[in-house]
Image 1: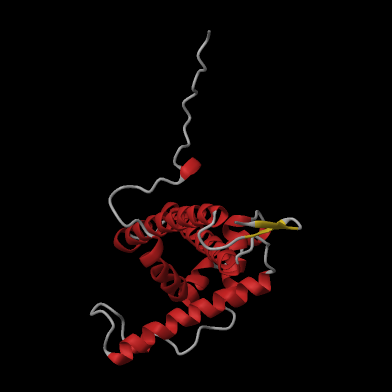
Image 2 (image 1 turned 180 degrees about the horizontal axis):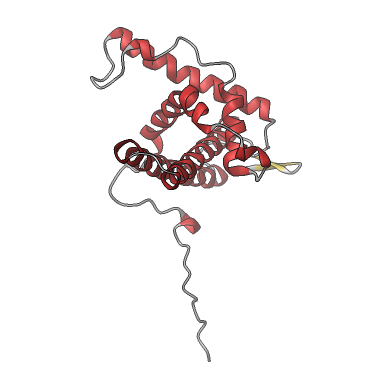
Length: 207
């Protein structure tokens, strides 16, 4: 059972609100996954066929969506971890992001050093010991500017530099989430009203 505290809801694992929250989390991860695949396809075209402003536009938009949905998923995960719908302060979310990115990085490094990493894994030299301290703040800034808000800063924000310096940490977070949140079968998941959406107008019967 969940309970109202002020204007915020607290909930427990397995209750009605938690189940609804998990549906929203799965939806957000599927959006993130779609965006990443669209970005990967555009990036492949950019590499194989050469760059132009149209493919740059397409790749930028897909990567901005990937950033946005990954960030929003992590905010939703924070709410589930704290069992509270309260909106957290940006610095708290940044700390949460940095903690999880470091956890994933450390896990991958340890697997390489122990010889238990998959054969396709990169060399240990590809992974620094620690996540840059400004990773989470840069992540949030790019999310805000590239998609969440319309601002003059979008025209001058260098997303290419962000990709070069921080993409590996975004990808590690995304890849880590796939085990629990990606589609587990060929059947698309039913997400309550999300997948009941229809543009068909249902006419009521007339007596």
